[in-house]
Image (cartoon, rainbow, N blue to C red; front, side, top):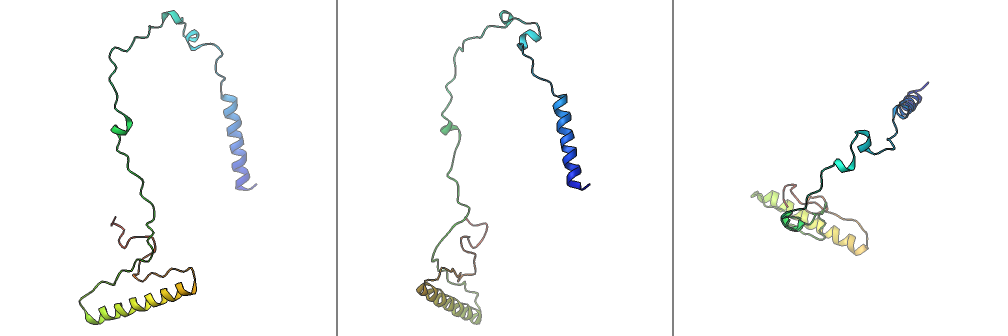
Length: 130
């Protein structure tokens, strides 16, 4: 006997035991169960001075939900300068090459996105920035 069959039989037995042990709700009123008549219940009191509740919009400050992903198209961010001329020049050349490849893909009509600023499309550069 496999584990699945054991679990299935165990579940069936638990459900059967639960249905056997369950009691039906009584057909009589709960007042009759405790020996109370409706005349013995206290009378309802009229509200004396009900305070005016503020509108729900005044009690709660609801803001529009923010999107899960921020999609921006054709955002061309230049690479940051590091102060080292060789690194800055290499980054600038790489950025220009990426821009040329992106424009060539767009001319060909291919639906492919290339990020030239080393970021993931639809996300901000830093996860903590709004």
